[in-house]
Amino acid sequence: MATADVIAALQEAFPDLGIEARPLCVYLDGRSSGQEFVRIPPERLIEVARFLRDDPRTRMDQLSDVTCVDYLNYPDAEDRFGVTYALLSIPHNHRLWLKVYVNDPEPTVPSVVDVWPGANWPEREVYDMFGVRFDGHPDLRRILCPDWFVDHPLRKDYPLTGKGERTEFKILERDSA
Image (cartoon, rainbow, N blue to C red; front, side):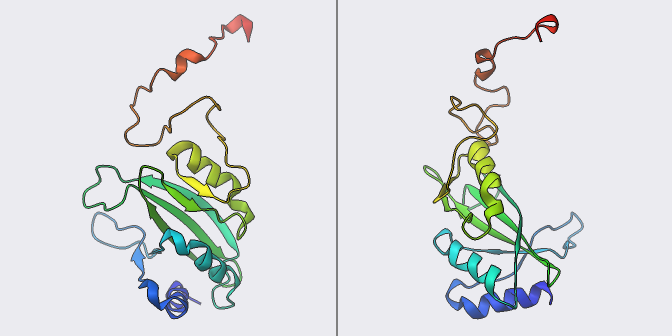
């Protein structure tokens, strides 16, 4: 089964979403990488995720990654954040990426941990680095930054030199380590 068949199954199951395949990557010379994504509204993410996991035509049984892109000041971007889910079907040997777009002031996406338990730590990482919250996550807390840290360092509006957070760390000398 090809990715086109997965997208056709999605279009059949969710005709109201207007699902269309879009190239995940386009090279500078205009060629497509052959990998595709579909855009899903946040309020329908869990329903679509369960369909992709459970339907025998799709069988997306593995969540490979959850990541995020901050589209602040990106030309023609309509939304601030794009949360991307990389899915793999081991039985059918195909991949598909789901993208969910959210905006400030409280970017929030439903957690897919109940669908794919492996989403637990990647969702925490996206929360920690970008500030996107995952409703229903069993343990949404920082995973890379200290608990007292209030910002999200991979946001485009975070200054390259930081906001003074390094002054909070004890300086270790070579002989004291």
